[in-house]
Length: 376
Image (tube, rainbow, N blue to C red):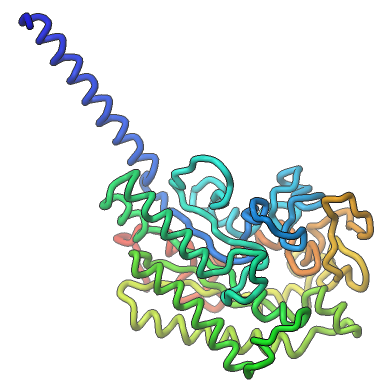
């Protein structure tokens, strides 16, 4: 080879190497730009952005038909709301794009995180088994993403991403609500305390599993007053809240608070945020005008007493439901899910709420890079 040809070859090789390095650097920057902490979401219909669209399940566990999505998106997305749900707002506050459903077809690097939530899911595998993705199965999906991150970005950057990320949970509502509508032998064969212990045990097991992979920052909300959902008011017949279900929820919330405190003492670097949704939602139900709402008991969309029957729209053009003209006036969009306006209110409290509502950290504090976190 001549000296000139050798020089050209070396020059060409230098350009290729430079391009390769530049591409790798760009991918790294895209994956973890300054102050862009990833968000991973686990849970049920309150957090599901459309994962169940891609499951072979029934329309009971899906919201990919009108009037869901009618306001913000202008089309159904699979979210059980007229518009955005809580994780959408949290992503916005954190400077992230909408977090994609894990099951959505296509090639995704999940650069800002992933959403595994599945409508109808419970902490217990037995809850709606065969129709949804339960919490422990969601953990397995997360473990696949962890491996994918290592493959795409290397062990060091993947580990940094996992450790800096925030992990949000909305789980338990179906575990306690479904036995009121189905013949649950698991629920009937245990005391309320034993049943709650199983739910909390599965939840803490998943949190510990994420922690073992490097996760350190968790947003785990208490449950709202499930017994006051329109579907339960309709079931009660009197229009009152279900005392039995709300007592179960209180047991759960108390056990959850204790479990999170124990994890904080046991797990290295564990930080968490727990929003008292029970008190927050009850306040909205009792005093809607104080917070810019008009109706705290009746759903915007549905049929029957309090529009509490589960039918709200339908993919087969069902018409046996009523739809209010302005979802933002209601605390509930359908029989058990909030409209966008209420979701935004809850998200704001989770993000920047004071310690008497959201503590010991709020999500804004958790989203700060670990080396910058301070707590007075």
